[in-house]
Length: 278
Figure (cartoon, rainbow, N blue to C red):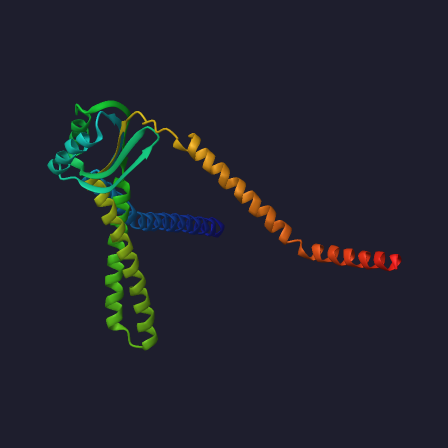
């Protein structure tokens, strides 16, 4: 009887240990799940925030165009182009004029508001002064992602800057103040750089670039070469002959040591000849 009671007691103890072990494992799993959920919650919030920000951010497109065409008369074409620049509030960034053999070129780099980009190009190409269109190249670059990235970075750096300024007020030692001020300076430089980049992209989006190259063809005028006439050729020959004489004369003068040496030899030979006669 005692043996049966001891056996049942041991069995009950083992069963209670297993339940405690299972409850401990379950509680451990629950704690791990809770910690994971808490750690993942900010990431999910950030991901949702990024998605919402992308959805709410207006699409940013940088447009540009390149046009090259031949005109009947360059001056009249430029006179027709000037009112269009005023009409569409465009800005001339660069202009250049040059000639190549039988062509006279005029190149303009213009900035036009993005809203008037298509209308401006269409009105230029519909001009009656265009003789032949050689090139029309239009491109669009989506920089929305760059805008979002810069804005997020700016927001983060501004928050960090605010925290460092709060820490600067609480700094107790000079070394702590120097460290915090150095961090603030670096953050301010990075913020200014990002703001400048954002402003540059905004200008590129707001004002589209159009490069216009127009030219006029003309027949080259024949100008006879008067240097081939008889008179100029005769005078040129006399001049070259005289130059040859002068060159030979000075060449002989350059050999003066040789002439002196030959003269001395002649004098010596002549004296010997006279002695032999005596």
